[in-house]
Length: 442
Image (cartoon, rainbow, N blue to C red; front, side, top):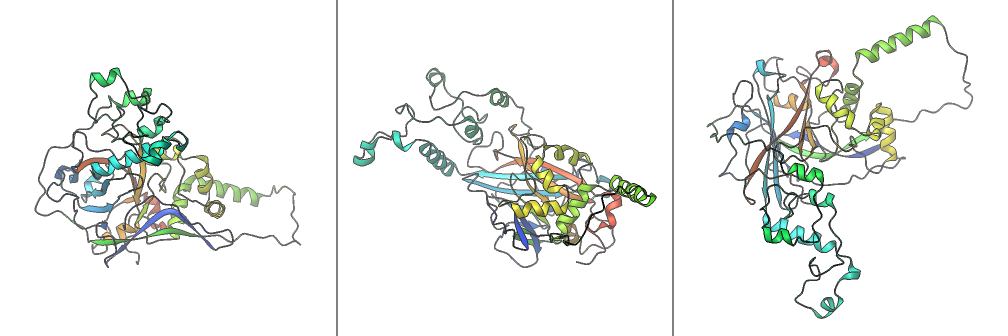
């Protein structure tokens, strides 16, 4: 969808009537857009057409049938992952008997790394870490063959922080479990610029990897949904008007103990207990841009359909207090948005709550989620009302964009990522954001 990127949003000032968030929204379009790769529905395409992944990735884990493509997303992030060519594919089973079961919606990440680009970025980062005050001025002015950036010849070079080393799984340090092992000679004379491994890093070296599925050729034809291009725009939210109290108004502080007040409180409590507040926030938020089929913010946070199902219970506790404050009610969200120069869906406190990467053991982070209106578009040509039943599909990916274990750098690899499916609740069918809203006008 155009090219996914690291970005900052330009938020509106408090005097403007709307605010723009960090979230990139995707909209289905029958007309071609400037992104020829990203699509809703249709058939998948691969980075390397001559070497596609095993077709087993597109099989339902319940019925073992091939699944149609819901989403293909071009997700290059050159500032975050230089030299990485990335795509995401989301498949979903159409078999009614498989619904609401694990393995019926699957996510595949394709990554191809350009070694030259990664090497150039590593060298650039290393050079940038050397303070200008300790550079060899003679070489800078008159030239010279000795590199002032060499850690072994420059005892004053700053060491790379551990957090920096772990963010690059393709570095030559031993924190990468897939790098070539160092010889015993180099181990006896370690590079002083290489920090010692932390306990967590040592443990990650022994993290078992999930073996790739057996090679399986793709069938001549897959079940498919209609093909749509994807258009993208940043999310805009209308600011709610600020309520003002006339100066002539007086407040009655006398406690109200009437039966009417008691009845109103009981009714309010009953409503809160029967209605998922997270779902109401979900409905209010997408109500401002109802035709969105996709939300994208790498490293951001998902807009939860519910905080009471298995996925919501897993993710909600890891949202920071700032995101909780912005999501407590839609009015407070707008208030936070109006005060902030960078507005995201959620701020994450440490762990995201998602299961770790099964390929390298690193943390997974939010990248995107499919929204209910995608079902409206994908099933527009279907007859009947017996369609997909999810409320949102949250995609969590390896924060390091790791390469497939055993895959040589420079070759396209494939890693199955996490799909957090929040299924539609029956009571929400008529609420306007249910599973596709079948029967509703577009």
